[in-house]
Length: 163
Ligand code: SF4
Image (tube, rainbow, N blue to C red):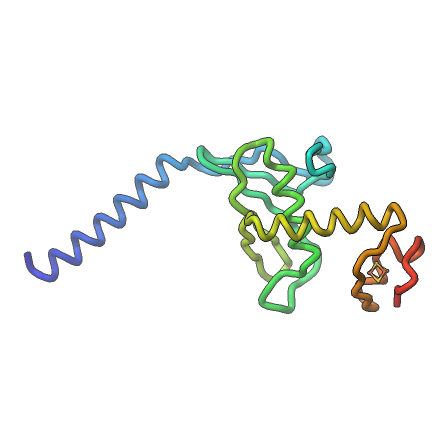
């Protein structure tokens, strides 16, 4: 077999695998959308004790994808941490539709794909634990900054570190 035939064979094999994968995976269908002017129920996860409304949940034959639309732009090469946590909360809420592999954060100028990893979920679990401790008046680590504190719900409540 000449080199040309070998390359052609490899190319056709890759193409066939991709084609078969796409057929079995199926197309992404919208199963949930929170859009202005339409009704979307509040989703709950009792185990995580969270409730909310992700912007978009897509599902194909194999897995679920979550989408969060942000009104601002991203000036960096990675998404903002609190946006990542919001998307991760969306993963937890979307589990009722199937296995969540990850999701997208859509800024006005770019988008990022975030995987639904154990590490990502652990970060969310830590934050939820801090929030619960804080609600009970217990000590939690803080990282004050003018930008963060401006929109923080704890600023006018119990936080004495706010800037
Ligand atoms: S107000 Fe307190 S809890 Fe909120 S961001 Fe600032 S330092 Fe953190």
